Length: 302
Image (cartoon, rainbow, N blue to C red):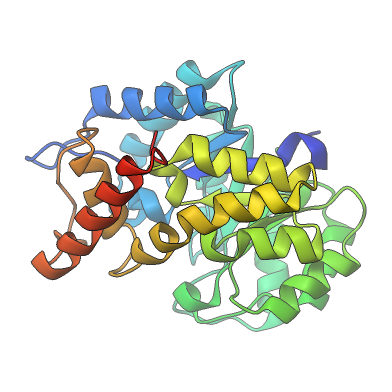
């Protein structure tokens, strides 16, 4: 079983590159993975929201996971998003991901159907019981319309030994602090929001981040989190300040539109999305262009 120390650091929620005809762009995918490995990330997340997971077929996820496993084995860990708003489908997706090479599963709150806390407990418990692989829960009320309350999370930790962490994107700093205070010693708390990563690591001893910004600046985000883990707060804060505007502006439109556009401008993928995601507006593109230019000029982009 992976330990809290194994999971600390930066996990990049990788974009999924597409060709202009909508097909997977596998050479671009390989280059993106290589760039993350070179930067020293703890792991990469495949089939997350940033990877446009709702638009990927089961066969495409299988292909990406197997390919990612080949590229990352022995170099960094592989996390796979396997949560849906149907427990049975989530169990199937989790088993498939484990079979294809996932080291860790990321299971999001069920979206749209808004289960009760008991429903959330039974959903996550059923998925955890179906596999032996470590699971990180993904609490994001803004995308799912339901919050995983701390009492429910603690109950799950107690009764499901392979639930070993949470991606906290509730947006509630008080709740994040409560989770960090009440968690068992070996339970991992990862920020789900780049913009507050430094704060929750400094104030609450969070363990790192599942990052969108590290698609663009992986070395810088890794350095930020490494400095924070080593409690070099002054250095970490300086790095955070250089990335603060980027972390804000990549959410100027719905994720992953801005971050994918930025990666395209860096020459790392094509400017291609799958509906209902669509190309960035002209106004927003100018904002991203300006930020990339600033970061390149100050040598804060690599």
